[in-house]
Image 1 (cartoon, rainbow, N blue to C red):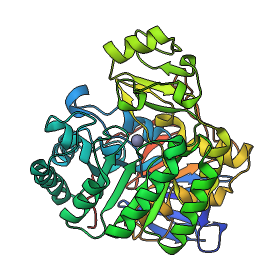
Image 2: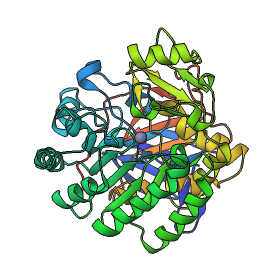
Image 3: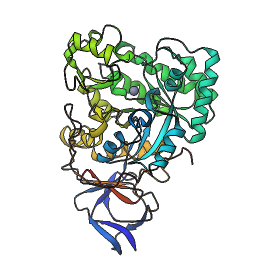
Length: 453
Ligand SMILES: [Zn+2]
């Protein structure tokens, strides 16, 4: 007998581009039945009017800080609450602990709210060697960094991440040399850009050159936060042309026109916020004693000095650029979710429902089918887990997100990220119900997924 039978729902058939009906049976973690007939099941779920989607895959987020915030799940519970079943941490060069520590902690806790993959963060290891942001990496230290990254690769990370804006001392040659020094043809190199505005397109060329030189999978991270200052269309034109020739290059973007970063980071160095053509009040702080407070010059300087780890949200991007990046047929949509003590940008909690409510249903800039594909099959292919995830198909892992396309709605906003989203009836992870009506019912169903295995 099946564990579950989901009846009357529609699933996306990416090959034909049509939604189709099927009864979907789940047993022992897998999609064990797929067809028109009824089957015996311990529980029958009526999904009439709903989409039975592959679980959402978030290729760009930031995992828990087990060392600093204790061995507890914060951001991954928000991931699960918005329909994500698999996510990739360690982005922007900023992994929060070595891969082994992360894996061991998940095992010790008996599972995680979502399945996890991880990147090895170059900046993380560079900082551990005592480097300041602007200092170039000395040749004698490079091998030490490679060795740590190789250890992470042996633990099953899916690639390497760089945060060029955070540590401008990292050169193009550092990236090429690292990519060459670490074995693994299919490793992904995910990069947080070097500089935005007029320098954005130059960055993009740097990443295209990196792809050509190393032939690794190069991922331009959160495109909007770099280019949606007037350069998105030019960047998309350039990337679409290159991706047509070389699908090993791709990008992700998040669906908000405000970015977020640590107020103490190099992002806020220099004549900020004048460099964005904005005012101090366009920057909002997210933690006490300035939670939800718009900056003045004095508050900005106080935070830089005394609360450097606090996340700031900067309302500086153009919404046309974000829309174009979300709607672009190529590329992926990802959250870039990151929180500090549970505080931060609502993208950590609302990205995926927002794609379907704002961009599919209200603005109609992307079809339901394409939006689902960009948060399921496309990242699954990129992560080489598309032989078991990213589609609704017999024999595939039963990671499923059942939602109502007419009512799905992101709850979290800039003043309160804890507001629940709506319209996601069920999230199945590895064959069991992990969330129901956007409420978590089991937060230990996820596992660490080693790359290429
Ligand atoms: Zn980043």
